[in-house]
Length: 228
Ligand code: 5RP
Image (cartoon, rainbow, N blue to C red; front, side, top):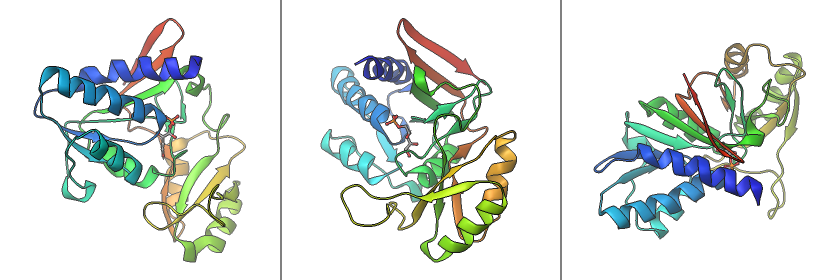
């Protein structure tokens, strides 16, 4: 499939950031899953040693399956590099993340990363954020009604994300709910990110206005590099 090929191309480009002895942040999602396969191949082919800091249980389990040792996110304040996927990327390298509901730990990982490297397929490249996906917002369950009301006052339309193979809402790795928020126009992602987080009980937003340093966009004929 075209999308999978583009994800693989982006992951192949990102693997060049991996160096022997590195403590590497590893995000979440299907593109990251491809990256982890390539990482395991590189480790075994080159005999290098890598420690990974995962941003979700999904990533922790895959890293464990392929034999990459891990350190909990809560034990690191800085990593030289972290790699991750995204749901939307604009020309200024602002992003929406959280399609896999891992946005809170991904933002912590992005903060720890001296270099935050993103891998996406071409469909994720958008003219304006919010055109393809809503903004995921992680909310404490006790703040659900308040958060929905205040997000509506900000002009957003929140929908509680429902689980697919469990009755009721998605529960994040941190025990919280996800609101998927549609906003008519995101003119200032950094301001909207701050405004959302001023609502009591909103823990994190999936807006990543300025975290990405390098974005590899897998395309039909190769990889496009976006750099800050
Ligand atoms: C998870 C994320 C993912 O990085 C994002 O959803 C992209 O996923 P995929 O690589 O499967 O398209 O933010 O919370």
